[in-house]
Length: 119
Image (cartoon, rainbow, N blue to C red; front, side, top):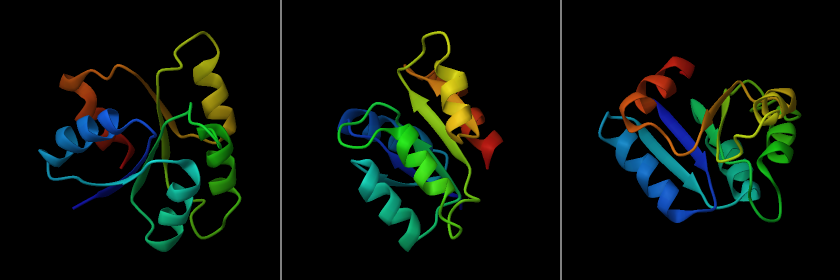
């Protein structure tokens, strides 16, 4: 069973993603901030990281760059899951080291397929 780490400061967003993916047999670990997420990824590397971009203290772009600089976890695919959907936001996330980009609000009907495509 694949295991995903979702780094997101909003508890409602974490619950929604956990329910959608969990219903498909995908295990979801959750971190409520970027630093905790990095520590969780180091302690127990997931198959994929879903990364919110707008978080207090450390944003998702900075967290992605930190993960990419750590040889133990640099290989893990990171997909931005973000409400930042203005022109240029996708390019900024990819330039920071994300492997993919999914805008919020998520499309419940296609979300699982989008995630599976990165695994």
